[in-house]
Amino acid sequence: MDDEFAINDRIAHLISEYGLTNADFAKKLGVPASSISHLLAKRNKPGLNFIMSLLEQYKDIDANWLLTGVRSSRSMARSLQDEGVEQDLFSAFEPENSSDSIEKKDEPQKNDVFLPPKDNQTKKVEKIVTFYSDKTFTEYYPN
Image (cartoon, rainbow, N blue to C red; front, side, top):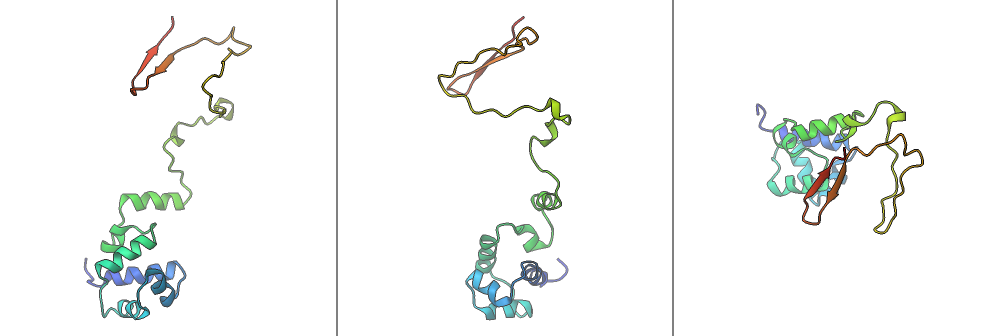
């Protein structure tokens, strides 16, 4: 870090980003307003308790950025999400054509009876998977 008070600038940036007054920010963190004034005037550096309180109160703040000024990959993902980029595990596997999409159905209940679809002449079973209580499974591929 080139500037030993850079963390103070980042705290000032946070206060501005959240649209808070120094007194409101101090109240949220449970510190005297004079502490914020001293930090912003670069007379003091924030202590560990102050930083921990800030990170606890504002969970969306990247701790690495706050301390070093460098954004972590977690905050980069958050930035992408803020820009509207979908960060869903399965989004890359969703079909592009809506006619190919899978309909979401209610969860089956224990004693439900499943009947084959009426047009079963055109559909064939490709695979049957059986899940066991010990977290194992078997797959059956009919010919």
